[in-house]
Image (cartoon, rainbow, N blue to C red):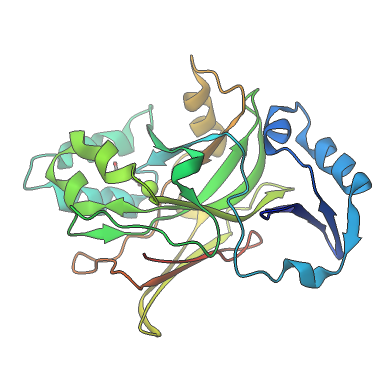
Length: 277
Ligand code: DO4
Ligand code: MG
């Protein structure tokens, strides 16, 4: 697996034991390339070898350029169940049931680069929301031609009170400053297997306040199917990032609070950590 980390001044590329630093790397060029792996191989050849300790940084910028971040929803049974519960009083539950079964997946716009945080940066909850959760999601890097070429970890931070009140409020529940975290690195290699674990831990005052785990076995749709719908009659000249939905939703009484620390691990991809502002 080749991993690219984005720092303020330069990027680091790790390939097994080797780490290279590159000062003028373009993520947009990577996402536009028909064979992004060769762009990284060239960057490693041009880069300066550095010690693996250079990877031990407390924060990284999100590994992206000008890409839009999109997200899929209700792709796991647990998400269907939680959305139906939260929107039942408003009569919205039927839509979540229908979209879980339908051919067409739920896809929504999630974030611009400016709204996206990297590993170590604070994520946000809305001031006008009373019920908030992180959503740990396998996230796909897709080039301008619609080919999945990389994988990373996304947090689709969401307001459950706003989306539960009315499904038409979804954009407000999902898109606001600091509602999205991506990272720590962009990973190029074999697609993650179905056994890949996704873990979420939320710490409050140093104690574990919530913890759960799922695997990609629980993801109902294929990665290619989600990308196919996203790119239908749509153009992404700089490529795109696509979150694939959450299989972990804390129970009804849990809400995120300022100061909570959210840690996600996806096997093989890394462990981003973000405190709630
Ligand atoms: O429609 C609600 C959002 C669903 C979502 O974000 C998810 O399932 O991950
Ligand atoms: Mg989500």
